[in-house]
Length: 312
Image 1 (cartoon, helix red, strand yellow):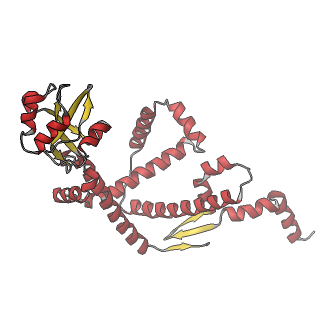
Image 2 (cartoon, rainbow, N blue to C red):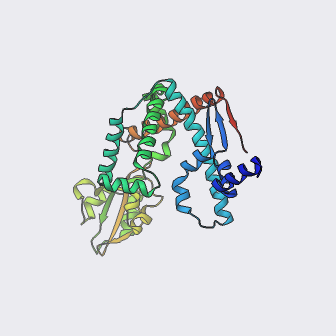
């Protein structure tokens, strides 16, 4: 038996043809990032929770396409993670183990889980607790890096908040509000007649209230206060639709009596007070600026790195 044949036979025994071929693909280098690499094994490890859910199930064409898309997205994220890890190393950022453990305990408390329940949930996702700790530590280190490289360079001023508030006028607009006055008429007085006398200038609305009304607000010109337009009953809204402030609406029936309404004051340009939305505007502007600064920082980082994709 020749040495070549013997070697081939031993390899076949140790590595069957299919598994040997898979091993080659499994360790295939997918991307080189400066001095580091990402292999097929690394990618599969990252996708382990998803792959575990799929198992040996036959995928449809649509599912295969979705999985391939997920692989590409995950690979791109891994490239970004390597770049950030290199930056973390460059700036000597290190998170103590106790910080990681504190974060795990805090997460357990928020979810109302014991350590055993939490570990079981992590394992269900296809990870060991050591895997989880490692990933969590990496996430915290990235936050530290971004805090140093990005967040500390972002500032939002009061004038920017004011400008954003004014620009987003429609977002903070409140609905129309009216101050209403009412004349509730006795059964022997016709609403149309009183309305005509007011419109002819014989009485003001307040004078007509004092003379005729048997309803509320008689000592205040019939005023019954302010109300949001949408809170008005349909017939009340229809009565004063298009009526200017101080005018008289069409007669309606209130408590089985004829009544006249007047929109004493109409306010249709109200805004949520700036102080009530200042914090949310601040956070929104901060997030936008952080994203812009981060995109610029990360683009520069990529431009200054050597990234080579070995497969298309």
